[in-house]
Amino acid sequence: MGRILLTGGAGFIGSHTYVELVAAGHEVVIVDNFSNARRDVIDRLEVITEAPVLFHEGDVLDKRFLEDVFRQHDFDAVIHFAAKKAVGESVEQPLLYFQTNCTGFATLLGAMKDARVFRIVFSSTATVYGNPVSLPCAEDHPIAPLSPYAHSKVTCETLLRQLKESDDRWAYGILRYFNPAGAHDSALIGEDPNDIPNNLMPYIAKVATGELPHLNVFGNDYDTPDGTGIRDYIHVVDLARGHVQSVNKLIDEDDSHVLNLGTGTGYSVMDMLRSYEKACGKELPYKIAPRRAGDIDCFFADPALARDYLGFEAQRGLDEMCRSSWNWVSRLRNR
Image (cartoon, rainbow, N blue to C red; front, top):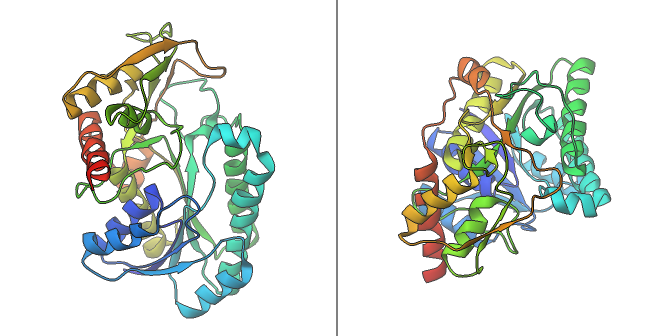
């Protein structure tokens, strides 16, 4: 096992990955500026893992800060989550997304190179594929990013490939994941957006708790069984395990890879709404609204390569995603 630097480790996916890394026997150090995470996540991680959490508060754009972190620890690999991730916000603020996601990543890679750490797992996204030309979507699908957010991820992926070509010491795992959902079984960590959520499950969760009046279903005339859009949702704990498998592959073999992390199963908006109603035990109000520009009928992963290469398979279905989310938001509301 190794010592892992986890940037953005207090965030939604990062915190769950921390738990899975520790369970797998890794030593983990978190770096986070808490711009999109709560500081008490660190305390909750200590409760879950029953051990102190090593963390440094700072920004991946701060080269001196990163140099100091690398001086203090002898890392075997880095898992990089620290980035902006809202498609709509990226359209409104493309410069912010380039600075944070691309410049921050380049600054991190520079600090890694100076510290002679050459293994990195990069948090990418299935939005790099754009509108799918074939389904299920495999890793050789054409890259066609449609938003500044997706473009920023493609830029970072390209940089990793070019680094590898220039210096064979580099080894990377690029993980393109679909739609993370759910929460940890402890209900101590989960998705906790500070404002109106961009993603479907946390939006439904806020309807279930009464924080939002109803769910807007954007279009019910898609070419799908119930007319609502279909997406591939993956439980965040399954996703976290995929990161552990990826970094283990890098540490053991220094073998670079680009993989989808999804289930290969599509769920519609109404599928998720009905499953969440089952989890919370009540009907949830919704309204049909006009389609949003750019939304597509259906999008789901081909998970075969991740299964064959890493042995990765998602274990948890939609009902478990909704149950764990409801347990999490119920605890948040009642604490």
